Amino acid sequence: MDVSPDFDVQLGRDGVALTVRDRELLSAIDEAGSLNAAADSLGRSYAHAQRRVVELEDAFGSLVDRSRGGGGGGGSELTDRAQELLATFDRVRAEFAGVAEADETVLTGRVIDRDGELATVETAAGRVRAVTPPDCTAVAVTIRADAVTLNRPADAPEPGGTSARNRFEGQVLEVDHGETLARVTVGIDPELHLTALVTVESVERLGLDSRAAVVATFKATATRAVARTES
Image 1 (cartoon, rainbow, N blue to C red):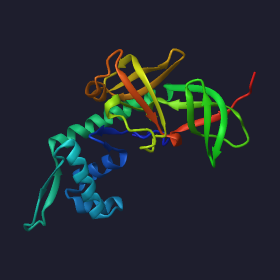
Image 2: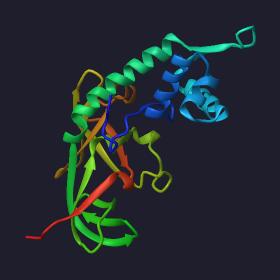
Image 3: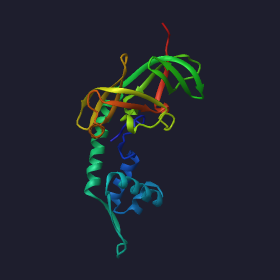
Image 4: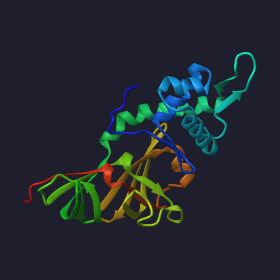
């Protein structure tokens, strides 16, 4: 199943994200019958693959049943939990591919500082860091819904303490549930609504009901600005 390279589907839990690369690794283990053979088929080191499986299991539970030694040299197979996780990932990926591009927030503003391809843009909502073309001052900043991460205020990273350089506090206004994904509309101020695309599981885990306070963060490298003509 193809997904645009601009979008990277992830399932997160306890600070660990199951990515497309992880799905490839688990699927390879399922097909090859061993972690060693799976790593080899993907051109990855066994040690790195093993560490990654341990990281995933610490967050998601037992994913790989391993047998050691014996005449066949041992092997590995996926647990029922892993199969369920992959099925969930595929459902999210399919739904995500159909809706992600349609959910964007656009802010207009002016460039006030530059650092290479990244610029600081002054908008009505506050300052936003974004990838910005050179030689322009008036810009429109597009924030994809899939790039926005939501946290409860008590669990949100401190400003400057994360690679997600953009940080806004707000309140949940609406949650539109799909089968596996939900669009969460966050009010940053009376004039600005920010859309986030998260899993239904995250909505339940974070308690994202109407009026809930949240902190929205998004990386500068996942945020794009284009030149605009001032009226």
